[in-house]
Length: 389
Image (tube, rainbow, N blue to C red; front, top):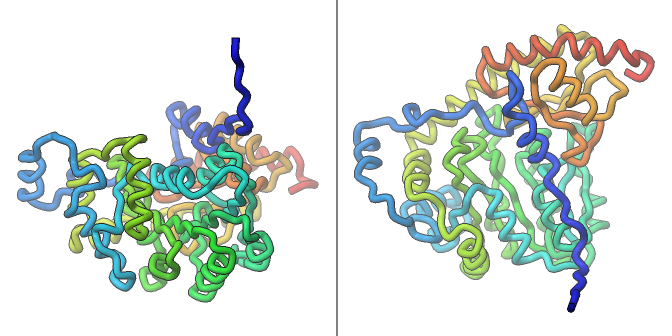
């Protein structure tokens, strides 16, 4: 009998998604999710013409790389970068785009650098490929500004890819133009691909403080975005990658293996959502939900008199908070889950233990109910170890 050994490391599960999959259906309040209060089909469809368009759709495959009309709408979001429909690949959420990018551009043994705290999909995919994965941090003592000196030191000639999330998940920080320029300079210096996960564009709490795109700033930038976060349309499972025509061909070949195509109805509904009037209406609706939710959180935080600490996010419906407890973030997450029937996410799963991520954008009554349920548990955790609070 012939046996074969392989050198890839043991498979590393996606801890954050495991946490949500295991527990989100068994709690009264799920504040672990990363989107905004979901938009209903009734809210999205603004006219009889939209409804008739859906009813007349033949349920056949769409164009494999995404319906051209949708790709043209996506390209129009990057007016200063010379983007056309041929620079766009429509994928099953941003997650498929990220997976295809890692498969295409992160050979085993190469260095991959990721922003931390952060959504750890690229981190885990690269580790599973046998890459040398390193993190550069956002500094909580400086309002979550990035440590770009650390990034520069990590970016060796062996670096295949640098991954950033802007606006950031889980802290909601928006990079400045100067910070973006320095990240691009570092990527150019070592020749690395720069993957810009921009799924929270449009969720800025102040619409005047718009997050800029990395797309067009460097010939090895790949932009990733989706309808799931700022638009509250995660059920469509529509995302996209933006890159040169060669990049799109590389990712398209992998898309054919993984998915063949996205859903035709999903393509049409995403196109409706990106129409100028509809987009403005949905984003305004979602900003209002975030504003109301943040006010609730601030009132709750004040009522707890120092037992909960958090920095106000610049974007996203997410807050990265700390409880006055000696428990690690996973233990604290379990305590909140079992004691308050509320699910929030341990910071360990973002590379920052001691913190937890909570969503405040799910509607006033829902968020208020979760905060009320959490209050006695927060007090109890603090009372167990007051000297370590």
